[in-house]
Structures are given as C-alpha cells and as structure tokens.
Image (cartoon, rainbow, N blue to C red; front, side, top):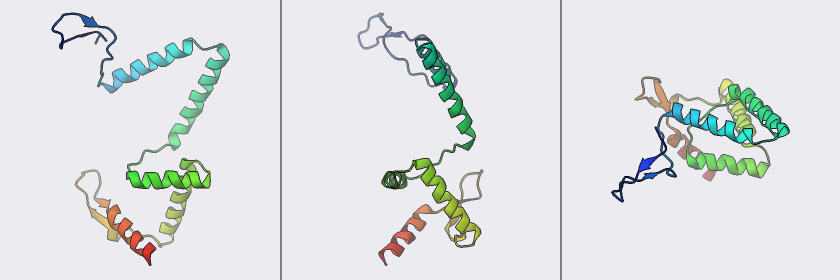
Length: 143
C-alpha cells in the first residue's frame, strides 16, 4: 500500500504524499517499524550503533522474564504510587508482592475458592471476582 492518498474532501485527484497511512496489519507495522529503526541507526556513529545493539541484546535477554497483565487502572496507579514512594522499580515491587502472595498461598493463608466464578471463556474454567476481594479488603481496613 502506498503512503499516497487521494484527497476525497476536495474532490480533486491530487495525491497527498504527506498523509500518514493507518496500516492495521501487525506484520506490516512490524516491518515498517524495523525499517525505521534501521534507517535511524544508519545515521548513528559506530559507537552509538554498538551501544544500541547492546541495549537491544539486553532487552532481548529480559524477554523470557516479561509478563503482561490485565489489571484495573486504580490497582496500577496504587502500584506505581507505592513504587515511587519506596523508590524502587515497579517491576521489582510487583515481583516482591507476588512472592509474598505465593508464599502465603502455599502456607494456606490465601484461598481462591470463595472468589471463583464460572468463566465464559473456553480457556478457563473459572475467573476470580476481584471486586468482591477489593470490597472485603476495604471493609477490613475500616475496622
């Protein structure tokens, strides 16, 4: 697909070469992004290219330990605020809290059965009712 577009609003057949086409295909986006990175790096000095390559390799080495989570915006904001307050990286704070929760779960202090609800997804048999847990914790904090 060419980045050129006809301008329908004017009714002319002029082509707008400055318009940024919206490519929806992830594979095409990835290829375009790679090309832009290569082009940017081509203008760097040898030392800067070497540094960029090292950073890419470090980022690639961290990939197996990365995880994406769907959490509420309020929970995310709380985690970010706590990480800033403690002066630690967000990822380390979350890892620390997860280690604590896993330890407590293994010791039988945390159970999921009362929070499980049937899942509509064929991938999972249950989902956890996080809102119920949030309400319980809020009630406990008020006491």
